[in-house]
Length: 102
Image (cartoon, rainbow, N blue to C red; front, side, top):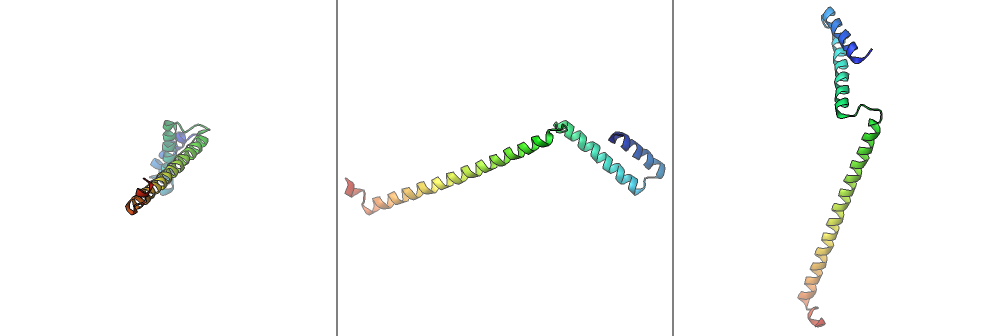
C-alpha cells in the first residue's frame, strides 16, 4: 500500500469515527510524507544516488568556503605587510636614509 492509499483510508476512518486524535495525527504524518516525496521529486532528489549528490555538493560548498576564507586571510596578511613596508619606507625617508644613498 502506498502513501496515497494509506491517506485515503485514514481520511475515511476519520470520517467514520468523527476524527479521534490518533487518526488525525496519522493523517498529518501521511500527508507530510506525501508532501515531502513530492518536493523531493520536483527537486530531482528522489533518485537512489541523490544522497551521494548532496554529500558531494556539501563537500564542494565547504571547499569553496575554505578557499574563500584562505583567500581573505592572504589578502589581509599581504595588505598589512605592504602597509608596514610603506611605513618603514616613510620612516627611512623621514630620517634621511634616502639622502645618504644619492
